[in-house]
Image (cartoon, rainbow, N blue to C red; front, side, top):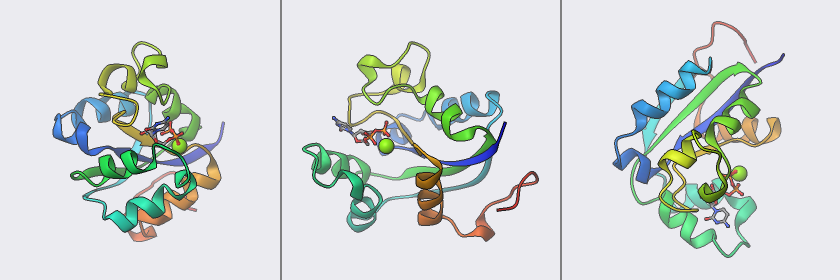
Length: 145
Ligand code: CDP
Ligand code: MG
């Protein structure tokens, strides 16, 4: 088992629905530790840069509009195999295909407004964590990068 970090974003529509507590409860029950957390409303520029890998996709504009529509709750999670473990809790990107009991199956409003973001690899998690957090904003007892 490897101790990893991953970036989580509770998307604006999910913050609006007041389900931060329900999502945090699920991930803490799954032995993921929140080692950093902030609420912010992404600027157009930040959202476009964060999701740059999707800039040529047809859903890009919808995704960016969703992400800048209100405050997001952004956190860094740490735990054993945190990246894959959080992806499993999240469920499939398209909530229609998400397994029952996953966060997206329970809380997504649509394919774009699918409640949460989670990093998909260790390269992505490093980039995404550094995008939002400095090392002074992360509080880990287990693991120093
Ligand atoms: O978020 P995840 O890594 O599961 O999926 P992605 O393929 O990296 O896509 C990023 C986000 O774009 C998704 O979470 C959806 O919000 C959105 N998306 C969409 O609106 N329509 C699609 N066909 C695919 C993704
Ligand atoms: Mg992704």
